[in-house]
Image (cartoon, rainbow over all chains, first blue to last red; front, side, top):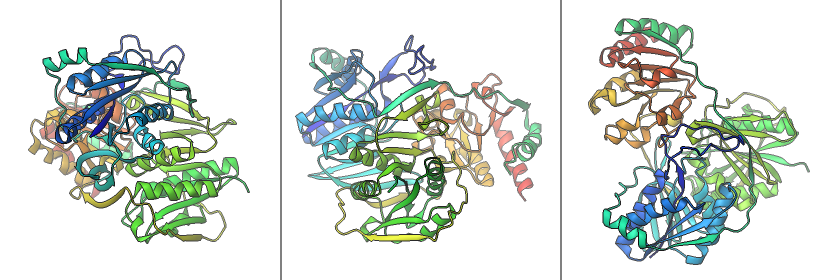
Length: 248
Length: 323
């Protein structure tokens, strides 16, 4: 089976965001970048799929040179080959999906995995956009996946439950937490990853359909008051919720 | 013919969801600014409360109908909504930012070669160009964005833009279009509901528990309070990773970002990832024994103390006031 997994290189979730001088992007100084947490579920599922059906897992990432660290992480977990699609300018989700679909076409994969969203821009749409551009099926936000020949049965998380979805290959699956437990890269895997090939290419020229005008911090919430230091404060709290906040 | 705004309605089990009415009111706001008509579009089989659209000032409804469309099918729904966008020369297509809208909106946007603004929490219509605000980095920052595409797809965060009653003076006109041979390549065959509980993403009141609860069985204290308040139960990442609660309850950067009217954090210290996911709640209550816990920095009201005493007392007190 031909398998592609797409990974993005994002600030650690513990990052305190500082707005950059251009007021359009974050200030990258001192920020630690990691593999997007949802992409770890995607890599794990890609590896499990390979273990079951055989084949090759190609890891693709769009961005700058530093993305190679994240590609290496996926290679260390066990994927076979890396491709870095280099871009000089920041792309919106549409541009990223274009870059991915233009590259994925070359491999004619049966299945493509990616995280349900990147924890930087939180768009959660790249999988769906890419599938449409490729003419592939797509199931997003997946927490359970079964592959039976050409037939796919997946469960996707929705408000208050799960949808059971049937579809066909070729398909893009976007991974939600709960799909699996991502493996740790073994020392052997880390050593092997150093020797695996990362092919570098330039993305095509894409114009962004969404333009960032400015980035700002949300208004800081002012700390309120400590109503009390033990259970005797409860009636006062309820009074505040009732009279001041008018909750009930 | 002038351009239009399509309000994409969401139905589940043959009923429009509340977010659909928020989508209608948001669409009306754009329509009034740009002097365009709103057309409500729904796909489904029978939709029991479709006529409620009129209450929000929209009189034209297109209902794409087929038995097989009762459940969501991304392939079939993308086809009918993209076709409607072309037929009515839609400038804007408005969806709710729900599991449904998040899946469908980008599919339609790609089909129409349109930009897609996801999870919009504010819109500024004062200038010549509409400016949309959305949170990034799980709410640690906000971006103002504009479109560079002819057609524009937006999903709006639930509970932010309230639905308003309105009347456009015209009689309700529901046009039913029977869809023959829908493309059912990808389709929902079943819905598994989580046991009877409200989802944090849709709740107006959330009571969340963290590591301070010490054991999974102690979540009953949180559940009891949520029950008397009519709210949902949430959890911190620590509680989810410990296996005390399912991931669907997780609030924060790798869980759900929520903006309820009331958020009560019990035994949650307030890691930056958690604060990012709930700081935009209207009122925040923190109950924690550590007076230096960061959660108190965002709380409107705090009690520093033992949640094992405070939660039962709070539940009783709320019961009294609601009685």
